[in-house]
Structures are given as structure tokens and as C-alpha cells.
Image 1 (cartoon, rainbow, N blue to C red):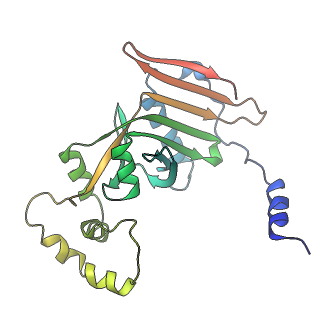
Image 2 (cartoon, rainbow, N blue to C red; image 1 turned 120 degrees about the vertical axis):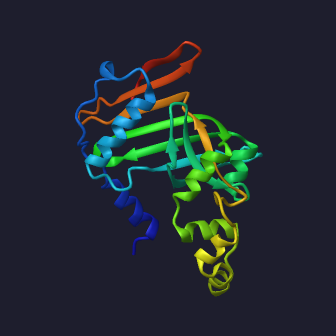
Image 3 (cartoon, one colour; image 1 turned 120 degrees about the horizontal axis):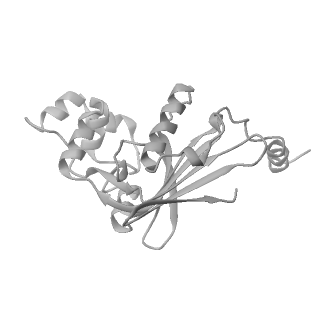
Length: 223
């Protein structure tokens, strides 16, 4: 009788990368600004029907240098940073605040494309965080106002009773912009980005952007 591990190995051996459906990427035609290229690739992913194209992996490190990674969503992007959300009291928020560096990976398998971002992290100003908070659903905002993200959940009935009607919890905040005290956006600097395009012939393209005082420079990397 085969073991589960042996079955898993056999299963993995039969898997392969999907054939990329994106047109061949010519780095000579890439824009000078990597955020502009990211916008083009994200739009292409949406048009191609890629599931949840704004979903990404966020990697952080704690004070002891131990890495963590989780899948989350891109809340916002501008010319200088990619913005993610986290409570300051959660492991993710503590790591972003105490060791302010992070890496992001966007992966659109059907297109054979990845985008990697690595850079310093900074907290958003209050107005940007408030605007992002207002875009959330009432239930999401109620959860964040309760401020128990990543804490042990011992009793789901108790949690439901504690949150109650989310509209009532939000009403307690009064007039004006509503935000959870510890929830905020964090910006991952876009100073270093890499674009990976898989090709059917195996000659994959990797284009890296690095920002300096004079603007962005680019270089091709070996696959």
C-alpha cells in the first residue's frame, strides 16, 4: 500500500505549468515607468478573465528575521507605492510597522505572468486610510472596529453577539469619516519591480526595474 507522501510525489510529478495565453512580451516596448506596465498587465488579466487579478502574496519579516507570507488584496496603487491593509495589532501589521520592508507577488497563471515588488514600507496618511475604510462593506468595517484580527476564535456565537448589527456598531462612531483605530493602509515602495513572462519555448522574459535619483533603469535577467 502506497503512503500518502508517495502518492503526493507521484501527483506532483505529473503536473506542469499551464501554457501562457498572453502575447509574447517585448521588453524593448515596455514603458519607462514600471507602475504603468503593471497597470497594463493588470488590465490584461482582467480582460482575460483571470480570477481575482488584484489578489497577491504579501511577504513580511518579524523582528527575529523569520519570514511570513499570506495572500491578500491590493487596496490601492499610485506612482510610488502599492498599498495593502492590516491592523496594527495583527501579526501582519506588527511586522509591517516594526520591520518596514516587504515583498509582493502577483501571479496570473493563465497568462504566464508574475509581477514582483520589493521595497520599504510606510504607513498611509489618515485621509487615505479613511477613504479605503469607507469602501469596505458594513460587516467588514464592524469586524475591524471590534479589532480582533488574527486573535483566537473560541466561540463564534459570542463573536456574533459581540458584533451585533454592524450598522449599529458603525453608528457609535458618530458623524464624519469612520475608521478603526488600529486599521491602516501600508505602502510598499515601488522602487524595485520585476516582470516575468513565461514563454511556450521556455525562453522566459524577466525584466527588472530599479529606481535611482535619475529615474528608473531596467535590465534583463536570466530565466
